[in-house]
Amino acid sequence: MDIADRIQTLRKMKGLSQEELAENTGVSRQAASKWESGQSAPDLDKIIIMSEYFGVTTDYILKGIETAKTNEEKGNVLASKILYLASTAFLAIGLLTAFGSWYEEQSAESIWGSMIIQVVGIAAYFIGKLISQSKASFIIKWLNIIIALFMPISLIVTWIVNRVITPYPTDIFSGIVFAIAYAIIIASSFFALKKYKAILEGRGQKI
Image (cartoon, rainbow, N blue to C red):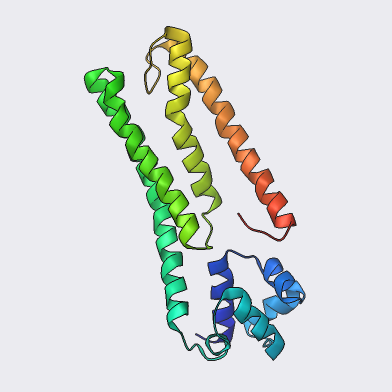
Protein backbone atom coordinates (compact mmCIF):
# COMPACT_ATOMS: atom_id res chain seq x y z
CA MET A 1 0.00 0.00 0.00
CA ASP A 2 1.49 3.36 -1.02
CA ILE A 3 0.71 6.89 0.18
CA ALA A 4 -2.13 7.24 -2.35
CA ASP A 5 -3.82 4.09 -1.04
CA ARG A 6 -3.37 5.14 2.57
CA ILE A 7 -4.96 8.54 1.97
CA GLN A 8 -7.91 6.92 0.21
CA THR A 9 -8.30 4.34 2.99
CA LEU A 10 -8.25 7.02 5.69
CA ARG A 11 -10.80 9.09 3.79
CA LYS A 12 -13.18 6.15 3.42
CA MET A 13 -12.74 5.12 7.06
CA LYS A 14 -13.80 8.65 8.02
CA GLY A 15 -16.78 8.45 5.66
CA LEU A 16 -15.69 11.43 3.56
CA SER A 17 -16.05 12.22 -0.12
CA GLN A 18 -13.07 13.54 -2.08
CA GLU A 19 -14.71 16.98 -1.99
CA GLU A 20 -14.87 16.85 1.81
CA LEU A 21 -11.25 15.71 2.07
CA ALA A 22 -10.22 18.59 -0.16
CA GLU A 23 -12.24 21.07 1.89
CA ASN A 24 -10.75 19.87 5.19
CA THR A 25 -7.18 20.05 3.87
CA GLY A 26 -7.57 23.34 2.01
CA VAL A 27 -7.00 22.08 -1.53
CA SER A 28 -9.12 21.58 -4.64
CA ARG A 29 -11.01 18.36 -5.31
CA GLN A 30 -8.74 17.78 -8.30
CA ALA A 31 -5.68 17.93 -6.04
CA ALA A 32 -7.21 15.42 -3.62
CA SER A 33 -8.09 13.17 -6.55
CA LYS A 34 -4.48 13.31 -7.79
CA TRP A 35 -3.23 12.33 -4.33
CA GLU A 36 -5.40 9.22 -4.36
CA SER A 37 -4.53 8.28 -7.94
CA GLY A 38 -0.81 8.69 -7.30
CA GLN A 39 -0.40 11.48 -9.86
CA SER A 40 0.98 13.80 -7.19
CA ALA A 41 1.90 13.72 -3.51
CA PRO A 42 0.64 16.13 -0.83
CA ASP A 43 2.99 18.76 0.56
CA LEU A 44 4.33 18.25 4.08
CA ASP A 45 1.94 20.81 5.58
CA LYS A 46 -1.02 18.95 4.06
CA ILE A 47 0.31 15.66 5.44
CA ILE A 48 0.47 17.22 8.90
CA ILE A 49 -3.11 18.49 8.54
CA MET A 50 -4.30 15.03 7.46
CA SER A 51 -2.43 13.30 10.28
CA GLU A 52 -4.15 15.52 12.85
CA TYR A 53 -7.55 15.25 11.16
CA PHE A 54 -7.47 11.45 10.78
CA GLY A 55 -5.77 10.86 14.13
CA VAL A 56 -2.72 9.07 12.70
CA THR A 57 0.98 9.85 12.60
CA THR A 58 2.73 11.48 9.66
CA ASP A 59 4.90 8.34 9.50
CA TYR A 60 1.79 6.29 8.82
CA ILE A 61 0.73 8.50 5.90
CA LEU A 62 4.26 8.72 4.46
CA LYS A 63 5.63 5.25 5.17
CA GLY A 64 2.72 3.11 6.35
CA ILE A 65 4.21 2.69 9.83
CA GLU A 66 1.23 1.86 12.01
CA THR A 67 0.97 2.75 15.66
CA ALA A 68 -1.20 1.18 18.34
CA LYS A 69 -3.60 4.12 17.92
CA THR A 70 -3.92 3.47 14.17
CA ASN A 71 -4.63 -0.21 14.75
CA GLU A 72 -7.14 0.65 17.47
CA GLU A 73 -8.99 3.05 15.15
CA LYS A 74 -9.16 0.38 12.43
CA GLY A 75 -10.52 -2.08 14.96
CA ASN A 76 -13.15 0.43 16.09
CA VAL A 77 -14.25 1.07 12.50
CA LEU A 78 -14.62 -2.66 11.86
CA ALA A 79 -16.49 -3.15 15.13
CA SER A 80 -18.89 -0.31 14.34
CA LYS A 81 -19.64 -1.71 10.89
CA ILE A 82 -20.36 -5.12 12.42
CA LEU A 83 -22.65 -3.48 14.98
CA TYR A 84 -24.51 -1.58 12.25
CA LEU A 85 -25.15 -4.83 10.37
CA ALA A 86 -26.05 -6.59 13.63
CA SER A 87 -28.57 -3.86 14.47
CA THR A 88 -30.46 -4.49 11.23
CA ALA A 89 -30.28 -8.26 11.78
CA PHE A 90 -31.63 -8.00 15.35
CA LEU A 91 -34.46 -5.73 14.24
CA ALA A 92 -35.45 -8.18 11.48
CA ILE A 93 -35.14 -11.21 13.77
CA GLY A 94 -37.25 -9.49 16.42
CA LEU A 95 -39.94 -8.73 13.85
CA LEU A 96 -40.03 -12.28 12.49
CA THR A 97 -40.04 -13.69 16.02
CA ALA A 98 -43.03 -11.52 16.86
CA PHE A 99 -44.88 -12.90 13.83
CA GLY A 100 -44.16 -16.48 14.87
CA SER A 101 -44.97 -15.94 18.54
CA TRP A 102 -48.27 -14.27 17.75
CA TYR A 103 -49.21 -16.96 15.26
CA GLU A 104 -48.61 -19.65 17.89
CA GLU A 105 -50.01 -18.01 21.05
CA GLN A 106 -52.26 -15.12 19.93
CA SER A 107 -51.43 -13.04 23.02
CA ALA A 108 -49.90 -9.61 23.48
CA GLU A 109 -47.49 -11.02 26.08
CA SER A 110 -45.99 -13.31 23.43
CA ILE A 111 -44.42 -10.41 21.53
CA TRP A 112 -42.60 -8.79 24.45
CA GLY A 113 -39.54 -10.97 23.95
CA SER A 114 -39.47 -9.98 20.29
CA MET A 115 -39.58 -6.31 21.20
CA ILE A 116 -36.62 -6.82 23.56
CA ILE A 117 -34.66 -8.29 20.62
CA GLN A 118 -35.45 -5.19 18.62
CA VAL A 119 -34.33 -2.96 21.51
CA VAL A 120 -31.01 -4.84 21.46
CA GLY A 121 -30.76 -4.06 17.75
CA ILE A 122 -31.37 -0.35 18.36
CA ALA A 123 -28.77 -0.37 21.14
CA ALA A 124 -26.24 -2.04 18.82
CA TYR A 125 -26.69 0.75 16.28
CA PHE A 126 -26.02 3.54 18.80
CA ILE A 127 -23.06 1.68 20.32
CA GLY A 128 -21.61 1.50 16.80
CA LYS A 129 -21.97 5.27 16.51
CA LEU A 130 -20.27 5.80 19.86
CA ILE A 131 -17.17 3.68 19.33
CA SER A 132 -16.16 5.04 15.93
CA GLN A 133 -16.56 8.01 13.62
CA SER A 134 -17.41 5.58 10.82
CA LYS A 135 -21.00 6.16 9.70
CA ALA A 136 -23.67 3.63 8.85
CA SER A 137 -24.64 3.50 5.19
CA PHE A 138 -27.83 5.10 3.94
CA ILE A 139 -29.45 1.70 3.32
CA ILE A 140 -28.71 0.52 6.88
CA LYS A 141 -30.28 3.66 8.35
CA TRP A 142 -33.34 3.35 6.13
CA LEU A 143 -33.83 -0.38 6.76
CA ASN A 144 -33.50 0.14 10.51
CA ILE A 145 -36.19 2.82 10.46
CA ILE A 146 -38.73 0.89 8.41
CA ILE A 147 -38.15 -2.42 10.22
CA ALA A 148 -38.29 -0.80 13.66
CA LEU A 149 -41.54 1.02 12.82
CA PHE A 150 -43.36 -1.97 11.31
CA MET A 151 -44.64 -3.38 14.58
CA PRO A 152 -45.55 -0.08 16.28
CA ILE A 153 -47.54 0.99 13.22
CA SER A 154 -49.31 -2.39 13.11
CA LEU A 155 -50.12 -2.23 16.83
CA ILE A 156 -51.61 1.25 16.45
CA VAL A 157 -53.59 0.42 13.29
CA THR A 158 -55.02 -2.87 14.59
CA TRP A 159 -55.96 -1.22 17.88
CA ILE A 160 -57.76 1.65 16.15
CA VAL A 161 -59.54 -0.61 13.65
CA ASN A 162 -60.30 -3.73 15.70
CA ARG A 163 -59.45 -2.81 19.30
CA VAL A 164 -56.97 -5.70 19.22
CA ILE A 165 -53.19 -5.37 19.45
CA THR A 166 -51.38 -7.54 16.89
CA PRO A 167 -47.86 -7.31 15.36
CA TYR A 168 -49.34 -7.62 11.85
CA PRO A 169 -52.79 -7.02 10.31
CA THR A 170 -55.14 -10.00 10.63
CA ASP A 171 -57.98 -8.92 8.33
CA ILE A 172 -58.39 -7.22 4.97
CA PHE A 173 -59.55 -3.82 6.23
CA SER A 174 -56.80 -3.39 8.83
CA GLY A 175 -54.36 -4.70 6.23
CA ILE A 176 -55.35 -1.97 3.78
CA VAL A 177 -55.12 0.75 6.41
CA PHE A 178 -51.76 -0.59 7.55
CA ALA A 179 -50.42 -0.83 3.99
CA ILE A 180 -51.31 2.82 3.32
CA ALA A 181 -49.78 4.03 6.60
CA TYR A 182 -46.65 1.92 6.18
CA ALA A 183 -46.14 2.99 2.57
CA ILE A 184 -46.29 6.62 3.70
CA ILE A 185 -43.69 5.89 6.39
CA ILE A 186 -41.40 4.09 3.93
CA ALA A 187 -41.55 6.91 1.38
CA SER A 188 -41.32 9.77 3.87
CA SER A 189 -38.39 8.23 5.77
CA PHE A 190 -36.52 7.67 2.49
CA PHE A 191 -36.91 11.27 1.33
CA ALA A 192 -36.30 12.67 4.83
CA LEU A 193 -32.99 10.79 5.07
CA LYS A 194 -32.02 11.94 1.57
CA LYS A 195 -32.80 15.56 2.44
CA TYR A 196 -30.96 15.32 5.77
CA LYS A 197 -27.93 13.82 4.02
CA ALA A 198 -27.93 16.63 1.44
CA ILE A 199 -28.13 19.27 4.19
CA LEU A 200 -25.21 17.79 6.14
CA GLU A 201 -23.10 17.33 3.04
CA GLY A 202 -23.74 20.97 2.23
CA ARG A 203 -22.22 21.79 5.62
CA GLY A 204 -19.22 19.54 4.94
CA GLN A 205 -20.49 16.73 7.17
CA LYS A 206 -21.47 13.12 6.51
CA ILE A 207 -24.31 11.01 7.91
